Length: 348
Picture 1 (cartoon, rainbow, N blue to C red):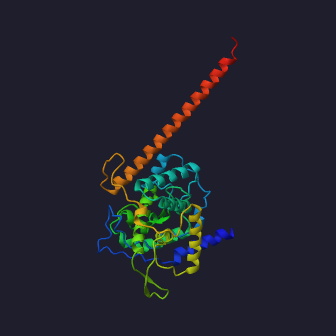
Picture 2 (cartoon, helix red, strand yellow; picture 1 turned 90 degrees about the vertical axis):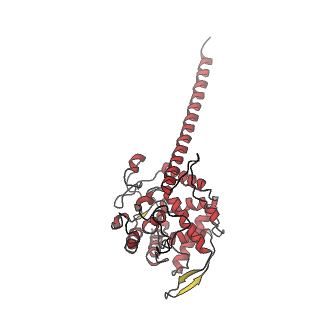
């Protein structure tokens, strides 16, 4: 109980006091298109997303698991499996395996490195226990989401959901604060789009790419007195993950909390065979595909999303069909052997 409480407090402090890059929004330079945002043109708005909270992997015993995926799809526009005021559905091993396969499919289609694939799986396991469509309801998430909504409202002017704080929550596999990450997908989108697991992977990749580009140049940070200073850092899996999750590449103003978060990440990374100090390049993140496996071109990200889901479901159906055929063949062999054994026992 003491360790859980400590982890919770650390997460809360990270969310409330670590102000990140202050969510600067500069649309004048054209870096914030609405739909079909280019992966190479992200802005500095990713400033303080979901807090780093080790307790996020704890399985919430509340609620009941929804096994009907068609019903899940109908709950909310973007496949959230519950509302902000609802209990979190129970998690099953089947759901975790499905999520693992979704991430693997997208990573393969991106032609991403094994290391980036490991990072995606690691973060999803910690933030959501590989459960798709979550609305993160811990107090730091709810408070951080509302605080971010108040700061970011003007950024989403024209979005039909802009004035409703209840939909601007922290969502999905990676615990993304929708106020900072929705625009990475589409500034006019329903923020609950971040409940979609494939959107989560694509958005995480775009955010990571942005941080890698920034790591290669001069970064203007602020010290504890608010005085700006120049800073440079190398892109490693540790720095990229910290920047995407915490919103900045600058050194933390709260060294003790930052050191704790660093230790947690490094331990988890090493357990899955990911070197946190490995240099990271854009090539390692892969590239969003612009056509389907059959060669059909995808002209926008909506087609990209639909196409990737169709490919995944087709692959799942094929695997299930092969498994069923193998089980039927096995059953037929057993039946044949039993029949032969019975025939041998019959008196002549």
